[in-house]
Amino acid sequence: MNVYAPLVPVFVVALLAPVLAFLMPARSRVPQVVILLLGGVLIGPAALDLAGPDDVTLLSDLGMGFLFLLAGYELEPSVLRERSGRRAGAAWLTSLVVAGVLVAAWVDRESVHTVAAGAIALTTTALGVVLPILREGGQLGTRLGRTVLVVGAVGELGPIVAMALLLGTRETGAAAILLVLFAVAAIGLASLPSRFRFPGGDVVLRASEHGTGQSTLRLTVLLLVTLLALAAGLGFDAVLGAFVGGMVLRRWAPGDMESLEKKLDVVAWGVFVPVFFVSSGMGLDVDSIVASPLLPLLLLVLMLVVRGGPVLLWFRRELPRVERVQTALYSATALPLLVAITEIAVAEDAMTTRVGAALVGAGVVSVIVLPMVASRLGPQDPVPDGGDDPPGDARTAG
Image (cartoon, rainbow, N blue to C red; front, top):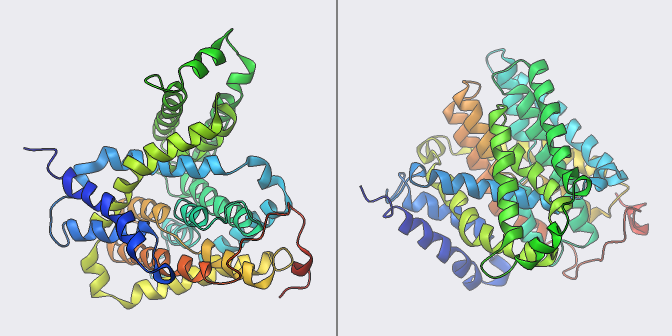
């Protein structure tokens, strides 16, 4: 069997995605993530059947790892202790409670796992998808970008922790203990370089960080796979290990950080991350979505209400009205983590394949529509970030 043949259409889609996105009119341009997903559907079992998710499992898993590593790296843990971080946490907890009530009233059977799976799925934020959009628009360092980053980070981290506690095979108490152990291990890794510095270690790493050595990049990959393995060994989803790995990397990596960030972009977005999105498209249950086309739209409305509504409420004094609506739309954008949650829930019989496919379909629509709408609201010139204090016009907004 030719194991390389299925990789050809996958990387053809990966190459064409940014080209097609660039050729689109600026006003109607969609994120290349959407093109990667639709390209995956086209070459996958649902259409041309040129390749399938099983053909790129390892590359796809590493792509998901790099995606959430970069998302975790963008987050400064200190911002979670600021007022915006506390409000983002309150908004997400509100979303979880509202989603739990709605799902409990909707499902036919009484099952804690079913309610938990549905509630968590409705409260996710696709930070890994939103960040490239904000970066391309020059908004990542603005007040809006900073708020979306914090809200999105909580929208990633909260569901990941809830998934580890509520959707695993272990009892919640045992899962909580293991989660604490994982956190302790991650904190230990983060503090290791400052506590144990070998003479000349930084000099050696910096001397070999370019050219054929690439020491800092290799150190990053080692950190990523170590935390992926640790999370999987403790029974958690790999997303948790990757996200925490990014947070650790911000404190750990020596050498030229700007150069390392560029290298990570090259490796992640040049090779692995596109494969993850194409693989996600190939794995979509298109038949179920076609059979119930209104269900994904209903779930999209629920995602907007459950995830966006609390953001509008909790940030009413932090942001002006337009930026608050933009933040709510970005926060309701969901897909990569949504795919992981639905796969776990379906495997544990906590969710039917029909609902799982519809949730992913709603996530696809959210990625196509919500960031596009959000990016067209408000002024086109980004407003510089003014720190944690609310802007003057936000105090009287909405």
